[in-house]
Length: 363
Image 1: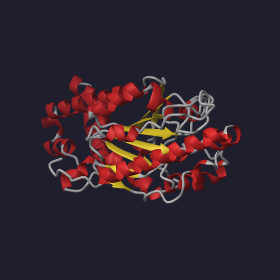
Image 2 (image 1 turned 120 degrees about the horizontal axis):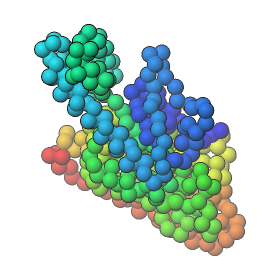
Image 3 (image 1 turned 135 degrees about the vertical axis):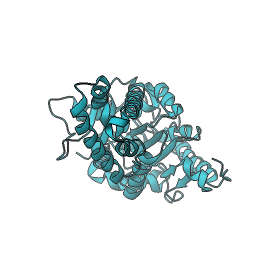
Image 4 (image 1 turned 180 degrees about the horizontal axis):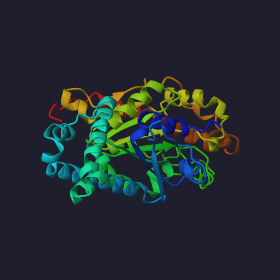
């Protein structure tokens, strides 16, 4: 109870669930997502819901990209068959199917109605036409689908990072959701590259000596990836905007979501307050990076949280993963806290400077 990951999954399913395919990395999200005879995913009154599949820890990004490539191939094949069968299906129906504007939910629903009509027409001729039979089998690919690659920080920052980087560099229409608990939660709380400096974890019992890997900054460096850092407890509307913008963005998107975990040594009934402190301290700055804004003459990086307003220790020492080091090794804790505060200050200055750089309207 109080897991920080599940609210983001629920939001995703509520926004896009009737047309969504999820490629889920092994981890906490695969355990509560579908390892038993029951699943939290369901369908609406039209029988539409999330299609969910789980892949290995190390290859989930490639697994998801493969699904995206298959979706594209089916769509291209459906469009080619539709053009070939056009005269027998009616030029108006074919034209509207091919030129459909599916940027909104209303547009997607209108396309579904057209596909329904298409299938009715194909039903009459498919026994006599191999092309009609093939089109009938792939007609649903004419409706826009939402592919989400989902996993934790152990997958995204560590074991599966090579594949994730390949996906981010691909430019394909793929959405990635990283549920960042800053530790290998499902396998007992080992340190990951997402674990912050000064945090105690397995294999970092003296406090992690190095700073947290900045996955968001690495992704932004590509220049054509939508990137957002969100924390639902600190900015629910900002989180909602990020999910909608990521899905609407025509290229690859990455959302990194702050996910408090029982492994943090925190009473999760206070999870929302702790998320606010994480943002106020600068540990978890909220922002959205949308490359499309540059083409409008706007800066692609929008900082959605203010400069750090409280000392980092006001956030850290509410959690056992930090407080335990202060009790066991106070001198080390003091030294690492100073370095962690420096991490926060320098990262904020970097983001702030980036957000004020001149914009090339050419994109």
